[in-house]
Image (cartoon, rainbow, N blue to C red; front, side, top):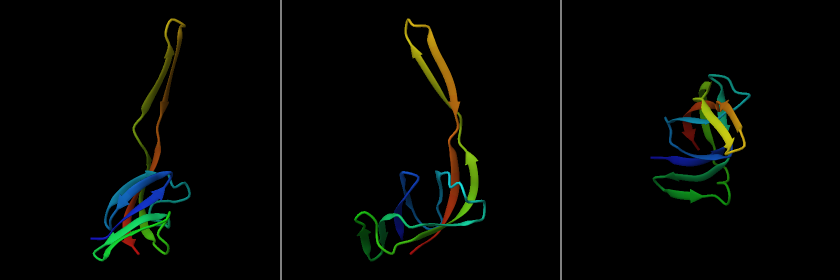
Length: 104
């Protein structure tokens, strides 16, 4: 079984063909578009594991965009005791769901 560890959006993901992964927003991609991740840190298959320094040269992961969306709302609450200071803010992080097609 082939797998790879890719880096996108400042985060790392372990992916295999057929997986659907939520990555940080890929702003310029719409549903159905093809995406290519070239920052492959580790690639493994039946023949062994290749570890990059920092990336594996020539390795590519191709995927298809399934959905663009926003995650659940996170409440950010700040306060300072005895100072009558309170602030409440909400935040929703954007994401892009991608389906991994192949690892080469």
